[in-house]
Image: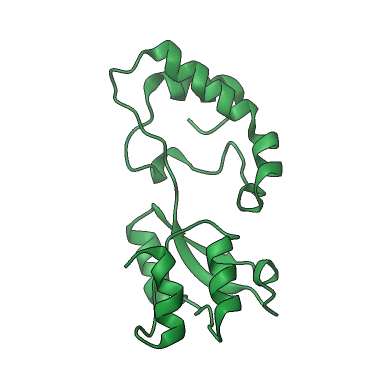
Length: 147
């Protein structure tokens, strides 16, 4: 079922729940909540703790209730988005991209509420699903970011 169909299916009762992986705030979630009486479900506790501990690309988090007119934040979990390349990618390109991205963190924070807590230290290398490209590690070291 497409994301666009999920809201209608929830509102009509043809499905009871849906798991969506997306960034918040989301216009789609806002539209679904405005479409009928729906609730965001809290997903928290030992199961989520175990999932995040076993699979470091899953992270515990909270959906800000204020983004959707809710009275409280909603405990949840999500995934970390990672940009990957091949080990054979030109080191100069990787280093320049890493330096450029790290240099734009303050601007990125202002572009989307999801990025407000972004830092160059946000994703320690041990939590990455693959090793850092050597040129990215070197560039991050030069800039004081995670390497």
